Length: 293
Image (cartoon, rainbow, N blue to C red; front, side, top):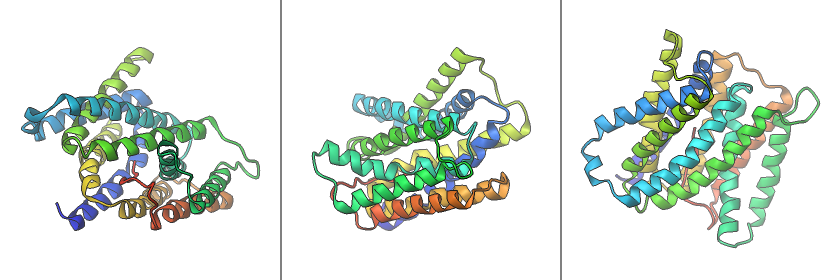
């Protein structure tokens, strides 16, 4: 795959997965978060096994180990996202979750024992200010439970991004994507069974949302992200990241009638500008990753 093809694939992946917040919000109207997570990713895993059954012959212990680690982090991230979407808007979730692009650089600084550059520190202050404005209720600041859970998900996402960059150089990225879907499916069904019941979507609206999540966001989005990351540089990946909350916010406004207050809009702008600013001139600490949900 050429760099240009990888850039195009990455952009399409981000655009497609930006719709997941909208479809998840619709699906949650008829299903619990863990049940929706389990059904979505179990069916995704089975479909991918049929599509790429030939690759499964090349499965190695190294790939399985990497998939378990990545799948665990992604399960934590997706679980936080799904639970938070029960109480916060899809546009808010997209903006908060994508702050992970900054946490990646800060975590890399800690891991590599380097002091973050001044520009990164300034951007971090800006993004924290943006989060402060995003969480304003009227003129009163304060995190809701859903917002705090979503931020926890962004930290899990940051860890997943860092390790994905590492493991895609050691294992087949398609196999990594497939196995992670299976881990998310098993995890979702297990938690759902332990906290309630496992059920299929109750109506056509819920089925439509689940099928969109499966084919648009998971089969295409999650699975091909590791492949795109293998050939795409950090600068392009980071710049494309800002598209995610923009698309999610537009879809939330059009289809879910979600409206942000002026201060929340200012906060969203600061978050998106920070995501762009931290990636325009990637530092040595920036890993070859992209952030989408």
